[in-house]
Image (cartoon, rainbow, N blue to C red; front, side, top):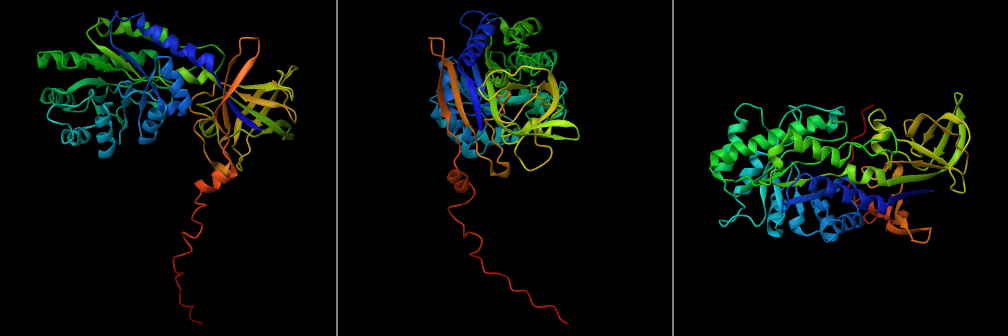
Length: 428
């Protein structure tokens, strides 16, 4: 009753458009690594496909690193971020030759004890927070004054500390700043990149050499969820950056990007069967099998994360007829489990299908096990060259046995083995 779909052709086109966008504004021979933010769609076949299309991996946990390794993304095309790296994570990254972006002074001090005398095998950089402000969604804004990420560049003494950290460590050769995310204007993203560029120039001037040779400008290009149009585009952003920070594109600096949502969102769809169609308070309600378990952000923050719903009949044909204001509900046992509230579309009836569009990133790949609902199967699809479509299984549907195993089914007596505490009977 529930399936997720990935448009392989669309993903390939997005990857090609990203590469072309930055190739158009950088001199030939400029080192550019586009590293997909694995958190956006953490599925091994997706990472393998993107690597085939020239996109590496940005990872922020041991699990994400394991996914990138399983997809055979080379270490030299992998970047490790995260504000909470453990010593073991740092050691593993250094041993594999994976680039590391250090988050804070304590992590840098920890890394001092792990870097061999000859220097690291892979590039190491420091993440700074340019503190340029928030976008429309506070929870996703990474460059606010009090953001948990990076070294807060405008705090008293912070800028001088950063410069000194580089001067004392010749092996620090990258600088990282990530300003963008959903709800952040391109102009604000460009300001963050400009701040990082100015800092790199200052470090190199005071070092008397080109110590910082690469800027990691992060990702965070917003996605248009209101229509089928793709915008803003990677090309628009690259052109804006080349105009706002021309020195970054004159060939003196390599570039790293970390886009996620903008590569995948438009190429994923959740399709759910309408199990029941009912009315409540005069409004039609289509009860489907897709809700909070595959659209967590939309259900809990519908104002920030609205989804468009497309209506299909039982045969999979687009529904026609007058638009009706209706709710599209999920299966979870709480009243707010709604994919859409008060949305106008052809009336959904029992046996029809509701498709949640633009869900290729941060939706079905981020399962939320409310009510122990199973993870849906994910299929990729592409034209077969003969006018039809061919499908390929990306991830199978979670079975009841797998749900039980994840819920401690292998150790049902883990808690009852403790002796019961006998309490004295109350006095009469």
